[in-house]
Length: 172
Image (cartoon, rainbow, N blue to C red; front, side, top):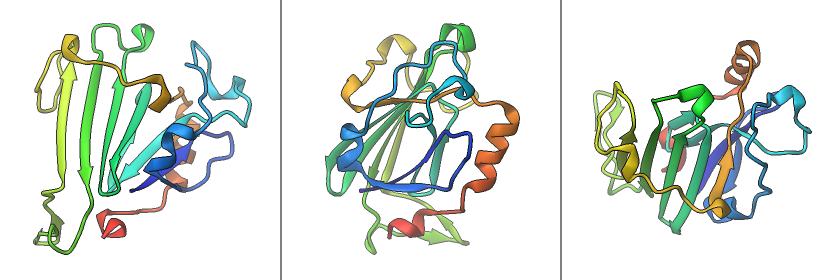
């Protein structure tokens, strides 16, 4: 399935399309322990944001994509850096199924998906739907895990400005 990734960069670019089958084969960067992007080689891939069916994941420490089939993928994103998150570790897990003419439902211009499922696990208080405790979270294999990196506020804004608006219809 199609996955849009915006790589963290000192010279931000728009989304790059990849196939979920290729995620595990991408070059893996090390966990950026206390580093900022300014200290990283430009050829090392760190994730700034991921867009799947118009759902954007950004600002997480780690991202994993599991290609389950040509019509189903699983994304897990989580925060577990004790310096940044202290007692607020959290993980989100979404499973996406292919959008087809049979699964599209619209109501007043909004997309209500029967193709997505979300699960959230947290150590602290989360202002979202709570469905599990952090102790239940099992980290995905390193083979499918890529890492995010801390961006300055200005650099983050530059990344956001480069992101084109791509919604669920691009997957139909």
